[in-house]
Image 1 (cartoon, protein in one colour):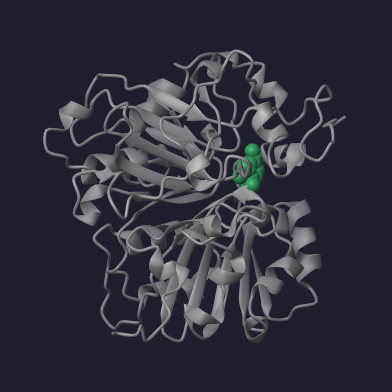
Image 2 (cartoon, rainbow, N blue to C red):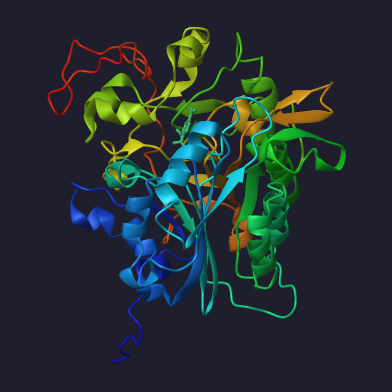
Amino acid sequence: VSKRLTPVNKIDQSEPYRFLLSTVHGIQDNYNQQNAISLKEILSVEHGQLIRSAQFNYMFDIEFLLEQYPLEFRLKPLLIVHGDSRHDNQSIKNQCSPYPQIEICPARLDIPFGTHHTKMMFLLYETGLRIVIHTANLILQDWRQKTQGIWISPICPKTNDDRESKTNFKKDLLEYIERYRARQLQFWQKTINEHDFSSINVHLISSTPGRHTGPDLNKFGHLKLRQTLKNYLNLDKDEQYNSSPIIGQFSSIGSLGPNANSWLTKEFLTSLKQLSSSSLESPELKLIYPTVENVRTSLEGYMAGGSLPYNMQNAMRQTWLVNYLHRWKADHRHRSQASPHIKTYLRATNDQFKDILWFLVTSANLSKAAWGVLEKNNTQLMIRSYEIGVLYTPKQFSKATFSLPDSPSFPIPYDLPPVKYQTSDKPWIVDVAYKDKPDSHGNMWDPS
Ligand SMILES: O=C(O)c1ccc([N+](=O)[O-])cc1C(=O)O
């Protein structure tokens, strides 16, 4: 009987998709075994001897973060990349001042209302470089009882020749990092260049602040997604998919304009619906965003709503959006009560939702700030925030589609088909009081 020489860890078990959810405190443990991982497990010594790391994020609790590293790695050099704003800079500086091993890199936010939303880790081991792209802030609350999405790369070995992935992931990642124009990132640009990315089978879809035009027009935001879908979906006879449904799932919503045609369908859906050939059909767009009832009955109760910052000012101006909305429901992953902070987008082959054509997990919510808005007669894309995500296309896995009944099937985080809001359902709005029904902890929500 062949005895396994090395115990297969959760990350290797997640092959070939390497797409995991965060573990949830308070659900049956077997739902935390399959395709689920904690921050401590990501940083565990079982993956090798860490040399140094970088953490890109929006919210940081430095004490919490250091505690998630194994004791023997807590003094290794750590780079913190955060949004450059007076408030954030002071808070991060104060938190990091006791730790000489921590270096800080403020990300320039030259366009108002932009945020450094990107959530990414660079983990340099003696055996190579691992990239993690995910959706959780580096605070306890984000890793305890929510549904978060995590893509974990293989450990890419050091190489003398410039080994690129079939998806140009290395080039795209370097292009993204270059936009920070930060000397603190030069070490990581050099390190990325020196490692072999040929085992990476996902596409990088990122956003950086700016008015992207000319050769940069399709490098970021929803135009990068459009370009990648056009170049890599090459499905035979893809016209059969022209009306197949598209899902967007997110934890916040920006100001989208007075009707669907302002940006959501005319611009954003045009990118999401891209196949190798273009079509005039308008596929059905289904949006998943938690109801008040989803939040009230969640493991965290109304407190979960603190991480769903959809505000009344936007909601009241776009009541038309409710017609697109569907509930958060994830029974098959035992996470219907683990409030979603994950953001995902996918296209199915038809409304049976048995096969999907592509899947994206990203930091990007449903907003123009994250995805970009076309300006100057569609010659430039204005993006306010940093975002990053990874796109799965079947070709990279030698498949025509990702068939869900298959094994191993693509680990979709929620139940399909999505369940439409009923007339009694209301989208969660963060700055409204909910005092008629107590939540799962017996509390009410009164933001005033
Ligand atoms: O957690 C975050 O990084 C975050 C920060 C700001 C906003 N926002 O301003 O809507 C949304 C999120 C979100 O991810 O939901």
